[in-house]
Length: 135
Length: 128
Image 1: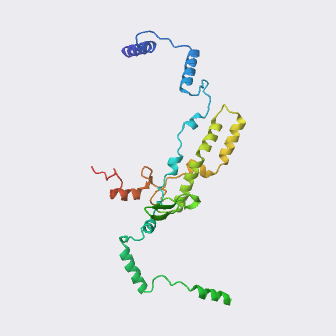
Image 2: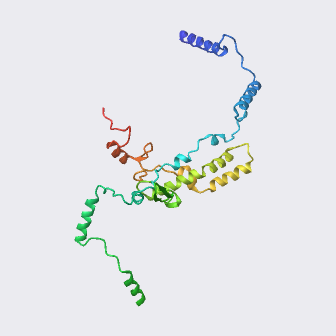
Image 3: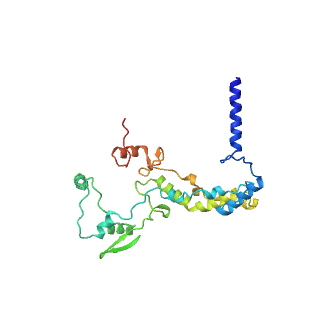
């Protein structure tokens, strides 16, 4: 017990000694608050920061934050304005190779048409008009 | 975008501002929620400086109380879509809203499939 208490006291004294001394071995005393405030003010003037010794809530932390808008708005990748159609139109003479499954799709469409499951034929517009007239 | 001509060829590139709300359509699979979220993102980004200024006024204790209250009223009166908290990370591929790996902007399933095929650089199946 006694040895532990002596060890604690030696640590305490050592901490006190370290806090009192600065590099060079001189004993340092804390400067008065007034001087510290002056130092803070000059530092604020030099680095153009807000001098706030009484710690008022100025809301500066809101302004300090980075804007998230650009990154938030560009989350989804944008659709390319250039499509295969525009490229086809730009080179009218060129024969583009068919897509991978185009031949299969065409053959299936042909089969469906033969079974009578193809797209319906467009109605004759002139006939429709005459119908309306009759009414 | 407009009309372009190069090497004697003329071609027309349609405008990308063709989606809903007068905004560019997000690429990939179109879902109602994706388009809605895109709109929220744009409006939040647009209103961010104004919201920031109003917030600064309300938080600033050195300003007169009347101005602070007024700013707070204006802030609460703004449309809810201008808030950053309304924005939700959704899957870029499928529009799914749950289990998103925000680093890759994808839901877990799409991420797994793409990683399996080796389409995400730097990602591979762990093996030890």
